[in-house]
Length: 454
Image 1 (cartoon, rainbow, N blue to C red):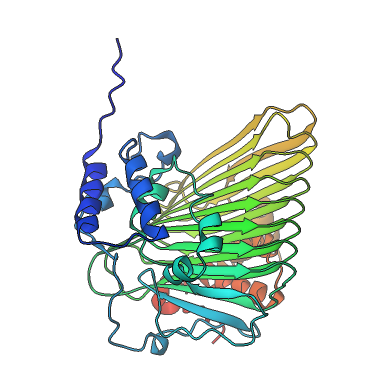
Image 2 (image 1 turned 30 degrees about the vertical axis):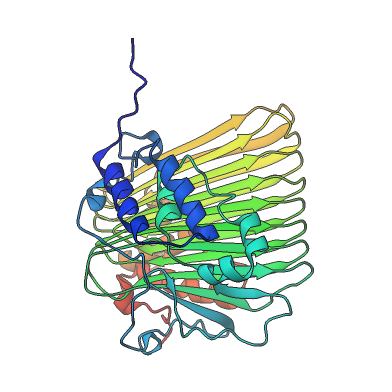
């Protein structure tokens, strides 16, 4: 008879014991702490996944977790003015800038007074204390409890950003979150964000991930986002981390009727990066548009895991992800569309296209459709190829050098995703960043600071 006894892994046990040690010195009984206790109890019934877990087959972070990482569970005193180090400004794009230091809301953030009435932007801790009714209604309601890394985040996250937009309020000015990892120790950062766009509201957020050091970093961030009826939300993630970084970014979107979502992740650089994007469509005529582009070289790894759940009829979802892999880079795409029995008239589309520039570059793609309704329009497609030889020949015959011809083809390939950015100033700047990255001019954060046109 097969045994049903759960055997906890050493890594899972390590973090459960660490949580016990931290809890012994923590007398807080707030909403965050309640969620932490619930999460650690659930974590005891599962294991932090390794590459034997099907969903994490191509992104095993257990070796990093075995090392001695400093967990950023408390805010640290910053001895320098971080604003002197930061110049993340997109020309012609006026933003509300929010800085986070090693996962903690920066104490010197200055929220603009020109925000529309009723809009709330503050730290996650402050939100749990000042706005408990809003916070409790949404916090930890959308993150998947079966994902061990999300549970780990809930159990240990100390802070993050809270953004609330009330009904009938539209924020035209972009909110820019700058996640800055810095210091001279190997660090484990777990940050939690909560974005809420109530009925008939509008919100645009740009998330910039950067590091100011070259030490080994493990980052496990979770963002939950709620879109009310007729709400519009755009979330752009710009990911640029050093080679020694191990990053898990999980986004959970919960959409009501007639809401519209645009989410785009641009992965320029990272040692090992995992993007989890989960969308749950719970109201009719909701629309989700998910885009991604990664540019890998050396031995970098990027894994995009996408799940869209169609719970109700008459909803639309689009997934469009691309990757360019050079040298010994590795990439993977796991895209899943789940259409439930009652979700008739669903339209769901998925496309994954990849370009491997060398024989040593490897791309794994796994599109999946799970359809339990019979009146739907669903499709998926995946390709892994090389530069078009006919196009190369045509460009060379017009006197264009081989190097420039390659760059032109790669740029055109990538621009299909970049063109999905709806805000023109941001689209132009991201286009410049992609061009610089393809030319090898943008290899790490010391050359970035999102100021490529300087």
